[in-house]
Image 1 (spheres, helix red, strand yellow):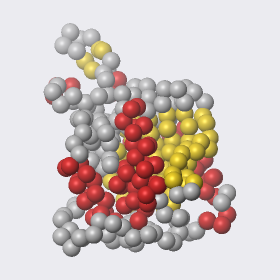
Image 2: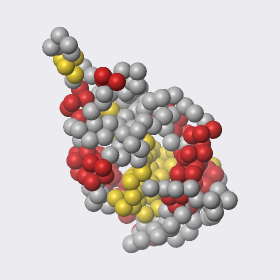
Image 3: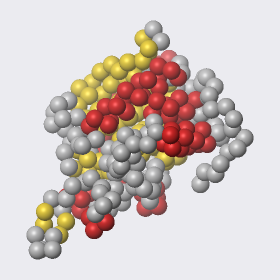
Amino acid sequence: MLAAWSCIKDSTPPEATGPRHTMIMYMLGDSNLAGDLAGNVNDVIAGSTASLPANGRIFVFYDDYSAVTLYEVVKHRGVAEKVAVKSYDVPRNSVDPENMAEVIRDVKAINDSRKGEISEDETYGIVFSSHGTGWFPPELNMQRPMAQGVVEPYTIEHDLRKPADGLTRAFGDDHGQGMSISDLVEGISPIHFDYVLFDACFMSSVEVLYEMRNSADYIIASPAEILRSGFPFKDVVPVLFMYFPKGSSMWGAYLWITIATRRHTSPGPLPS
């Protein structure tokens, strides 16, 4: 639980130094969130231009309707941009655990090829951006019994105006397919992550957290809806990189103050 930190007066984090910090963004744009996720990528680039430290690396895996690409965010003359480092076959099921693991292995291989940067203390984080429904198997998202006894397709979109259509629980929406949390754990298994951030609804149930207990040291998630416009990545990226060297005690406070402040002043449409 995070309480108020009244002693924090300056929200500008210091320059980070030390071992490499790599953040992977795993973004599923084969859904009605495509435009929002594209905006999130632009926010990440803007945040990186302002504050990506020398020891920071950002990789963006983006699966949309026309292409599936792994990008790296790099700085050129002080301005961040995304550069494609690998393309994958289309169509691709990005909620398949082996396909997810392939992406993570690809990132690790790129990092490991940079011999001068390898360190036992390096930090790895991953951000998941898509729909999220928490705990129950994803197959249940694809159907709902109707009053007439007919089973019809069930959309993964959550509608607060229709409480009878309550969501079941899983992560991801790739052409209507999701993945169970056990599959997600398998998918990220090539790396033990220092943190996992879910830019997705309903992902902080105790069942999800318990299933992922050996996958990451920290999990950042919401028990309720996330605005479909997503986390304020332009502001969150600097916090992640400045206050998540190993052993930093102030990182969580700055992260949540950043998110809460931005969301209070810049409301967006519900829900994700």
